[in-house]
Amino acid sequence: MNVKLIIILFILCLKLNSSAQEQMNLTMNQVIEIAQQKSLNAYINENLFLSSSWKYRAFLAQKRPWVEFFSRPIEFDKSIDVITDNTGTYLSRTEKFTSDATLSVSQNILSTGGEISLYTDLNMLNNYSNENLFWSATPVSIQLSQPLFQFNSFKWDKKLAPLNFEIAKKEYSQSNEEIAMKAISYFFDLLDAQLQYKIAQLNKQSADSLYIKSKGRYERGAIALIDLQRLELNMLNTHTSFEKAKMQLERNKYELKSFLGLRYDQELMLEVPDSVPDLNINPQEALNMAMANNPEILEFQQTILQADRNVDRAKGNNGLRSSVDLNLGFDKSGQSIQSIYQNPDRAQDVSVSLYIPILDWGMSKGQREMAISDKKVAVARVEMEKNDFEQNILMSALEFNMLKSMILNAKKANAISEKTYQVVEDRFLLGKVNLETFYAARNERDNALSNYYNRIRNYWYYYYYMRSITLYDFQNEVALSKN
Image (cartoon, rainbow, N blue to C red; front, side, top):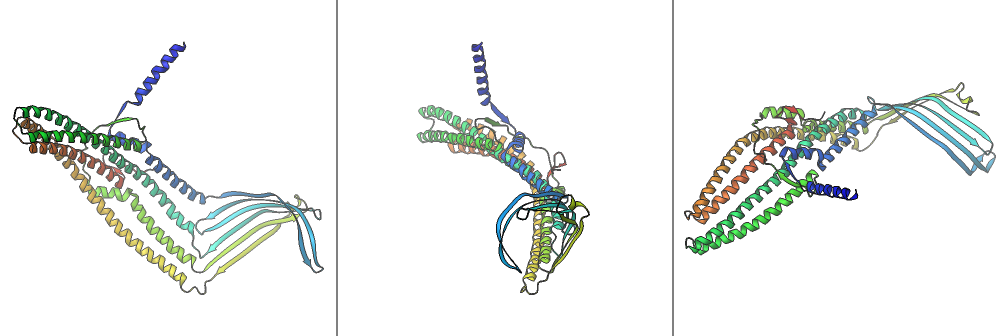
């Protein structure tokens, strides 16, 4: 029985080890999906949005009442006091125990910036020096604190907090598209490394074959010694290029796996996205979508609101300031806890404070004028940035629409260069073209293939860039903003 168990475990270990080395074939869309769900960038963006969400919830909590309880259940004081009265000065030993508790319900007044509270408290004093037990309580009391002619932060939070949260939602959606753009960069970096590795491998094999064949032609006197030596040098160079391409391939594999959060020993092979959708983006439609969805438009509004807020604050904090504090309720004291809740006395307290600056050497006026000037600068900058934003959207749409035809041209050029190379290679072996012509044809083939992949790379990068700045999926015709 133990032998069978050991065999089974051994087979499972072999399977697990072989599965760890299995090659993962990934398309571009799969790489984007993994990046948006499992990458470190996605984790950071998710938590940034959660932080903004909790910040907005904190603002909403300001609009609701809150309950607080405060207590000092034990406070013991044993000391000697110096007392002076009409009979003279003498020392008095104090030994007392106190305890108190307060329960309150408070509510912000958002429209005026004040605060209203309803509270009750209970206090106890036991003076051991004269064996006197004393109770006092406020059964119920209403307290109002209202600033006058001052800056009301609640009023501006009411305008800015929902706007900030809406910006955070749109920035979260935009960050997903930016992750897609990063994923495309890493994807095509590795794809290009795969391509360069394949090209280097083909060139190495071709150089080895040509050198071997050319040695026979040299022995027959068909080519000169210098041509044979150049072919040998080319063979050595292709071996070096192959090793460099192999190293670059491994480096780019590691970078993509690190970005996606995959195991370092996971083998990857990317599939070439050799087809692109037949998509044409109307520049005006792209601009309309960007104006409706892009967080930068809301940030323009945010900038103006913050400038208005600063002006209001400068005016409110540097002029006449006043406040009213009102306290209405009942209180009573007595020798027993039962007596203090029987027929409590009315208590009221009203105070008005007033602050009038007499001479500040123009400091208040300077702060107000500075805030007003800053607002004018903010408005001018927003107008300029808005114009640049609109122009960028229109030009980006026009540039994107050109990429499809550029891909088709690059694909044709790649096919032609491949055929040309095959013809030149055959003619070179027959001695009908020289070595320079052969090298030129090979370079044209390599460059045409690289150019074709770069055009595909540019197309998809630009496509997701258009999605990021408009927050709109032009293929499926749906908005990308987070609800």
